[in-house]
Length: 470
Ligand code: GLU
Image (cartoon, rainbow, N blue to C red; front, side, top):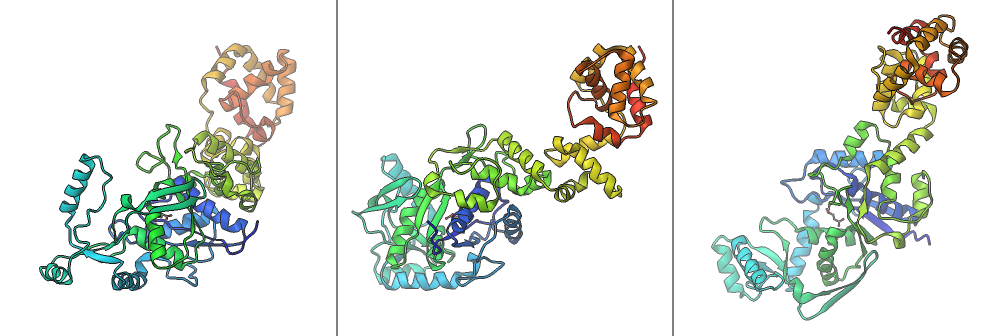
């Protein structure tokens, strides 16, 4: 059902390049908004000043736009609930911290990281879930003042009332139950004054009118705290859904550290954005239509009830299939632009167009085009093992006759096949396979007619003559 009040968002931390896992999260949120004619917000979560970099933010925006996504609100386009960089929202957070303190819903905590660590270890050793022991919960005003004047910079902790159950319906995982006793009071403002992740993430979602938070499963355990915070402020709680993580072919979660390619790397290798989107659309989202879809078609088929709970496997071979399908659907002008870098500089445009058309069926990535163009225009190609065998089997007499026949055929493949056939008596694969192998070095490849039309007759003749001798 279309519902124009649907507002989704993508909220990356600009600490590195976009990889397939977070690109999928962005895509799904974009599709959910488009499906309902709603809004898609881009918010940059750059409160971690040590790891966040403006150049990562710029690259994130460029990568998302390249993938074909667009957003109604974000750091580049502005919007009614801006700014969309968390680093510029300190005032919003400060107002909320003050409110929590005034209402007694949060308190300064002077525990040092070492003390907290020791307490956590003790709880783990006793088999209890680690949570804040409440040391600073009931300090008097005088005690707080004394600690502060002694120079200790406190964190701000949100008070969690124990003895309750927090229940919410995750739109991927179903009903979730958390005991507030297991949560414990948690930090909303760090000792350096910056807002903690849970806090600004939840508050910004509410302030930006986000209705659906679709994000990675690794955030599921954060959600109860975010519910508690939003309830404390009387703000609307978005619906949360946590998609299963993407794993690689080895079953381990995709991560940069394990060599998962970034979107930039894929783009530089010549992967097409629609191929990547089609690949991602099928990872953890079932149903929908088969075949290559546009983003608008994906949006029509995107359905929250089709999100899977099991980890989705991102398989390079599957991505290559989408890439092949997308490349084969490109219109000639778009294909020439895509493969432009593979062409020799200054090539006549009509010849370039003919060359690209001739090799296109065998090109999945620009690197394939580079190889085929070298085969057509460059030195005689080296022979692949299968081609060597075929050539050996055909024998020197075959190639003596073929190279002789080539003298009268120019660069006309049909004429060459006919003349070689009548000179050798060979037919079918025993005729054209050895010719293909000698001419291209491979026993498979694009149609030879258009390929040969781009070659000089003497080049063809020389390639055949190579095997005419003993
Ligand atoms: N900045 C968080 C991340 O990149 C956002 C999590 C969320 O989508 O809520 O993991």
